[in-house]
Image 1: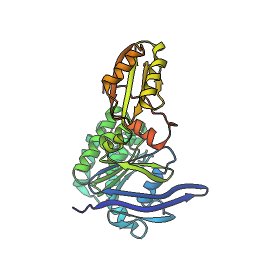
Image 2 (image 1 turned 135 degrees about the horizontal axis):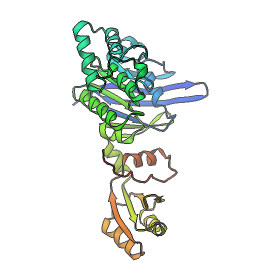
Image 3 (image 1 turned 60 degrees about the vertical axis):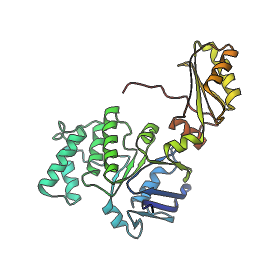
Image 4 (image 1 turned 120 degrees about the vertical axis):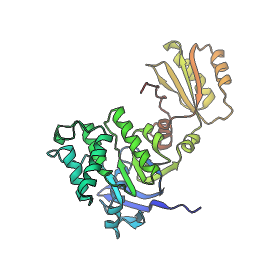
Length: 325
């Protein structure tokens, strides 16, 4: 079966003076999927989005979005996409409802259908009660939700979301996640840049890790996690046992352990497929380490990100604690 790509770039280059933002970026996003684009600050994520949405002309390479060249067919690209950038683009003097109706007119929606679609989106994103207030009175999260609603007035073939949930509370974030997943299920291709690793893990069919303007790693969340092996984690009974526990993990995993003193947790990644939980428990017991809990589990996407981008100097972050939603 032949794969059709909604976004395809080859060797994209972009410089801003001395800054080489894109250094031969290759992307391939299949139609109807959600692609998570991750990377450290300054990696080139936003520049890539600006090139792919025709806001910036590349210095080299090529890219096609929805079948159109982003330079020669820029108008056709713009007609096929939706975009939510990092900064909200709503008019603060207009009400939420007026903003959506204005955007609807710009997208050639008219009359009752435009009004109905605006009202539907205000309800979906929890803005119905504030719909007739000026947007300047909205909180940052409310403006963000209104901005995303504006990008969904029509159903775009490709939707670009540049860190869409930054600063949102968990409830608002869940609303946006549900909307994104629904769009993808209906056939819209979504390219999502985010710094929330949980967001990419929840939404993305495929992930591209961009580092220094290039696609450094790519794969499904499961494939990327498999590359760095497992994560061994020990919760000790008291703080004095953390160093001995770290010694055991260092010997067994060959990785530099990370100590979380607040939670009395020591963890380390391992690619040793022969390491088992019973063996880990036996070694800790033999070293006289008093433990509360021991786990050997797949890594989180946060740990994958830190390891594969080399931003932890060989270390991996401690696992996040589970919290009630």
